[in-house]
Length: 133
Image 1 (cartoon, rainbow, N blue to C red):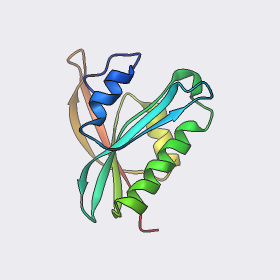
Image 2 (tube, rainbow, N blue to C red):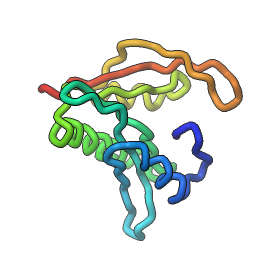
Image 3 (cartoon, one colour):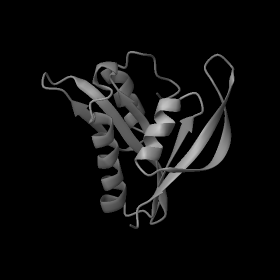
Image 4 (cartoon, rainbow, N blue to C red):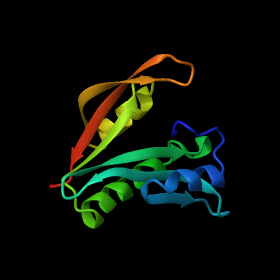
């Protein structure tokens, strides 16, 4: 989740975050409730942008919706923003996410230091996928 977020996410939190992001995207369930959210940011024309805030409601994890959401964001980056690479930062504490992004074709290329909500040190693993294929 984004640094200012408090779980569970509310529409107001998502709306406030999406104002500074590109292509905010939600997945709705059959009842019209938001079950997934993501966006893009740090767009550098024709070069790269970053995948941000990939969030899925716990009850929908493992259903294929996260993969569909990320594939949709990849398509937006490739076809609408026409960038060469899509980047992301995944926390070292998110083993499931790291394995998932790797499965989708994202490759790690660097580390960054992140301070967690409790002041703890976390490694941010920078990953990217080429969109030229």
